[in-house]
Image (tube, rainbow, N blue to C red):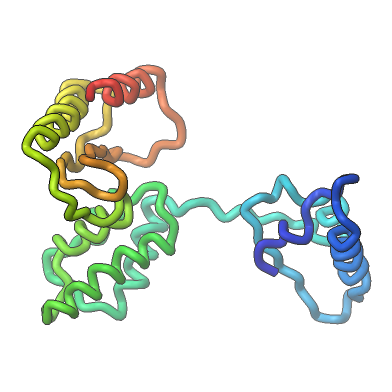
Length: 219
């Protein structure tokens, strides 16, 4: 049962009768299974904390398995799995791509490979080059390039702004390395400067948080 929170959220006096009856019936059905039925009920949600306690008590949905965002090793394995059906250029390094995609899900990684594969096929290439994977990564992270022309004055202002972020980042030991800085409009942004950490981060030190603030204000 996907999105179990749609019918299994915590009950309150504000719920209408249909909502309460649906959850109550689900609880009855879960209690009705016998041990020899050979039935396993698996539910998924992004909001486990919102589920009704009666639903997660022992004997019902009492085992919780947390599925986190994949780490570097997991992202590399996911990319390798999806790439098995694709022809990649000899210069493609999936580990390099995996390092850049911290925080992405398996669906995001599949989307990157798919975008690069579609473009390569449309242009009649025999193999997917690394540059198409990098462009697909940019598209997934910050959106499509916009063709809306900016005036020279607007381009100059945007360049000063993005250049400020970049210069502060380069001169700051606590900042992540700059991956790309551009004044090419993407999504809702006139330009973008973004950095990619060199390692997986599960917590940040004070000087790293200060560096992030400095880079943000540098534009």
